[in-house]
Amino acid sequence: MSQAFPGQALLLMAHGSRDADARNEYRRIHAVLVERLAPTPVVFSVLEFPGDDGLPSIVDGWKQCLDAGARRIVALPFFLFPAGHVREDLPAELRAAREAGGWASLDLLPPIGAADELLTALETRADDAAGDGASGKTAVILVGAGTSDPDANGDLCKAARLFWERSGDRYPQVEAAWVSLTRPSVPDVIERCVRLGADRIVAVPYFLNTGVLLKRIDNRLVEAREAYPGIPITRGEHIGLHPSLLDLLERRARDGFEDRIATAGLIPICSRPSCAAVADGRAALLREAEPVG
Image 1 (tube, rainbow, N blue to C red):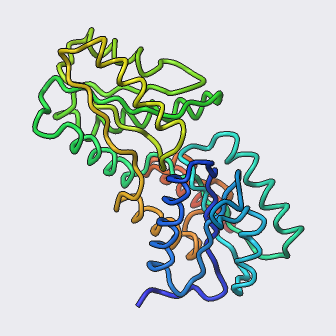
Image 2: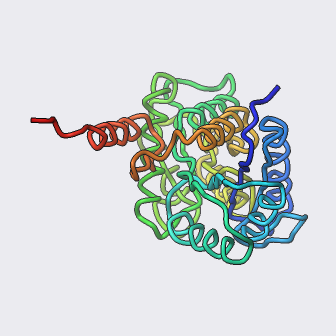
């Protein structure tokens, strides 16, 4: 039987989408976490386009947590990077929720980041797309949505490097590209891979769920296949409902319920062990008492 966390609830906060397939994925992820974390209440809310297919706004999701008996709410951003939505919009929504829906203690967790479970999911997506055709000259392109936030764009580059650290023996070239708002674009990076000698290219969307931007990748790849007819160019699946992502969400939720994430006011935003170690070391120093005498 799942461990109970009396008086607590999990509030997932996603971007939201007009795309019906994306909303369906939200509901499926919600259903899995409801089962895994039962009897603790789990609510899946969205920042934009609430109300579609029954997905509540963050304010309404907060109310649902309170109605389920929560006195402490663990808020988990279903976002990859700590960009503007995570830094500004989500805290503002949570403040508004408290004012409108009623008070509860709160822990706002970091976004998902390039956690090991996420890198495992990306490796699986790349391997499935490469199939038996992978060679020592296969290039992998991690494709992000793109943002005007330089830190978020840099985080995708970090994820690409971490991916290479794990799988460089199979994929000696790992690059980052974006669909919108910044460069290099997908065509830019495909050209770079070809010039550097890649004989096969696998594009792996660095997207938690499907949606309009993700579907633009296919158009870019159609154009690339026409430009380079002799080079196989395939697209892997986005992260979606990969078991490793679901395991990560469950682990983050349980860490939040047990108050294992916030460390003396310094949260390891990058969600990597190295960042957590820095936060833990700082917390240990702050706890040390001044010697007597």
